[in-house]
Image (cartoon, rainbow, N blue to C red; front, side, top):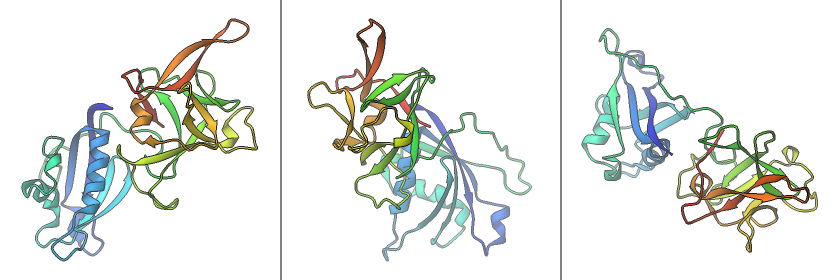
Length: 253
């Protein structure tokens, strides 16, 4: 999931008319992972009184609005965040550029890599496709997960430590469950649940009552495909959990 990733960030305080003139930033990250992890980190930053400093609104994965409780000019808040080294682990993972203020003449670039699909937040439903071959999707048939270029199923991803209604941005370390949306699967056994988990014997992905021990990052790095033959001799691909660098790169859309 590497590759430069960009986010527009805009100051927005309803009773401050200068929101129309100042506080526009372009954030650039080493990856989308880093952007989402910074969003979560900003939500957790508190002042000496224990009050959250940042008030963030995530309109899309790449368009955030913000306000802060800090004194001074709020349109400089993201710069002050970096100067004060508030979260040191982000020093080498992102930077920011001040965009056009009223009458300043600065450039306002168009994002070269807009994110597509649903935002990666708790409880959203996604198609899961191959990043290198985007015509390949996860597809559920007869309680098993296949890789298909003609069919696809949808999956709900939830963090196990979050309430179902908590629209928390999911990051790599989060423990999750993956559940197939029943109306998008074929020949599903309706007497069981639709959780996705590796088979304990084969590591192939099955669908049933077992929730599995997933981290969010596993979805993107630790699932590969194996080729099998059916009774007629035709070949097909099955999704398999792999931990020794055999996984492919997937994305949620």
